[in-house]
Image (cartoon, rainbow, N blue to C red; front, top):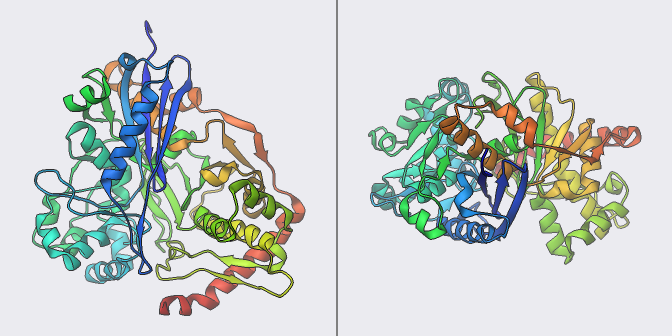
Length: 505
């Protein structure tokens, strides 16, 4: 190469946008920037954001990384977008946003999930049609909700985009989506990689909705080039490509080297996810596992729980603690939190499917009701929920040899130990922690090389550029493994006992 080639990776998540510039020649991140997001919420399950907030955050962070002294704008070759999954961005015929985007964690549309499922013929029939259930949080129910609750807005609907698709649209003026993120709509068949007419007709049998869907493209295909206004805004070359991008989990899979069988990634973010690569669809007959496509050309069997750092952030805010102080207090409490157990369903729950569930602390006494135990139980409860997800993966024959840990919670050494002990599996973190942004940058590179240099396997790129942080490698502790087995059994029993109450909420 006569000059370095630079690739921008953008991860637009629930809590904020992270943007990086990655150097192909040096194999390192040259610059990074972060901008926070707000959220609109209420007690009925509404969780929304204004898409213009994402655009402002993208604009701010792109401008910040491009002024870094090691970054040359003329060497930027491609941009990749990682976005929070499942959100609905409704556009009118002029490309304007009609209303705030309902997010993955929005459970206000849970009744519509049931309505779609019943209209198709029940859960088994839905799984037969798309490989997944119409889970709370998926996009399908949001569209039916819009049709029923805001018919005037539904009448204006011209294009239904996912969050990362909308950012691609802003950059390129192209309305396209790729197989990975499309998998989380619940109107996409992961086996055939096509839109599901059965689900679309269950939402709207007039044909309007099908006409509102974006074009499907492969994961290694570009959405297009940045439009002239974007090139002028950021002073970039006119031929900068925008890759297909994908959902945040799909991009984090790339960013952790999870592009071949045998690797399992766990994300400790606002929500929690566990996923592995597969070279064929893995469909769970119970529907608890999400049978997604990957954004690397394969499939990504995944389990999602809706409350991980939600639990610790709420506890931290309640007690008025900083992040380090919360970690210190949790570390000072014994494993098992002296019997205090958190059922962490602050946002309802997807796995197990309990969209109307509420959170609760259990086992409190006059002696164990301490800030230290509440802090530790908040971590443990979130991790026990993820352990349930791991068991769902194991039931489909996926056995992790090690878990690659990412997300905000992965920065905590205590949480690393907790995951190793509760999962009964070694844990390690990638050297560069922002897996979504890294995955987006590498996918952009993969797309660029495919378009300009004849192609390369994504596995080659991840093996070259993804390194693991050996200082974070954590093995299970035999004593704590035994203790957490008992705690987990109690957690499962408590879930079963409380299910009828959750359904009444």
